[in-house]
Amino acid sequence: MLYLHGVGHFHPENLITNRFLEELDIGISEEWIMERVGIRTRHTSLPLDYIKTTKNQDPRAAVEAGIYTNAQSGARAARLALERANLKPEEIGMVVSGSSTPDYAIPAEAAIVAAELGINVPCFDLNSACSSFGVQIKFLSDMRPETLPPYTLVVNPESFTHTIDYSDRRTAPLFGDGSSAVVVSACVPSTMVFEASFSDSNPLSWDKVRIPRLGHFWQNGSSVQGFAIRKTTESLRKLQKAFPINSGRFKFIGHQANFGMLKTVCERCGIPEKDHWYNVVDYGNTGGSSAPCVLSQNWDRLRPGDHIALVMVGSGLTWVRTMLRVAE
Image (cartoon, rainbow, N blue to C red; front, top):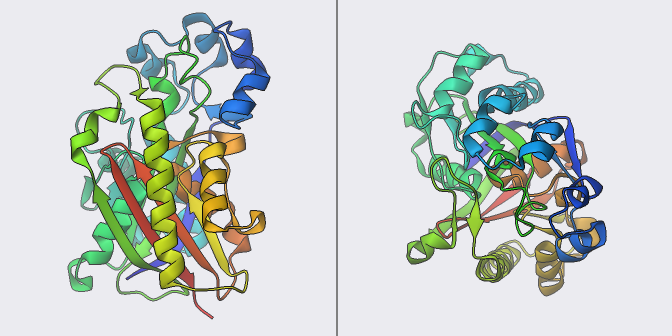
């Protein structure tokens, strides 16, 4: 069990529209993108002129071209989480980060985010690609409360557009950049608590989704789509069985891979549109930050009695589920 005190998100202002992608002349149209993945726009920390001119053929150049570092975008999300938790940076006792697209091999990105915030505490990375947030919550939930500081900051900064080959129509429409942050505690109670956290992996399929060091994102699209639908459906059904709520208080947030995948899961699990919270249509897949960003964007909609089922899947192949309960 882990208490949630605040959550924040940040997305850079540069916008990749479907019209922009069509004008790259890589064999896709606005209609084709909406039909295939259901994504209208995605945010990027890269200048649009850089993408148009280079199509990001050398991902190493994207690090210098970006208008935000992971630490800067992660810190922006963290400041919102701290504000909502009514805490100051100096009250944080540990920083945990995880990113599919870290700016540095070393040090841990948590240390760079902490430095950006002026926090001088123990830091480490706990990374499991797009499922990182769920794995982090599971890991902290399983620790004895007395081994943790009163407040821990968990940050997931993602710059996926830095890894995309914009001459490849299969991946160009899928991803955006975004960062999430939560303030959690194992010992200081709040009205919101993570329960029933579970994670598992199929490492024999590790090569289905990968980003080589200094390389482009690659995935076996059909295989990964099937995995995401199966495991998200299976995980959501288990949460529905464990928390049988029929009063409209059961909400679902999934990994924001694409809208078609999420729609299929909702149909299979009987989740009505009003109880499905998502942002993939306007932000694309932002990796490990995607589900917590949706939670942050719906912060003001949380009400006593709500149960928010979060299901995340990712490279590894890894799947995670957890329930966020808002106390009556």
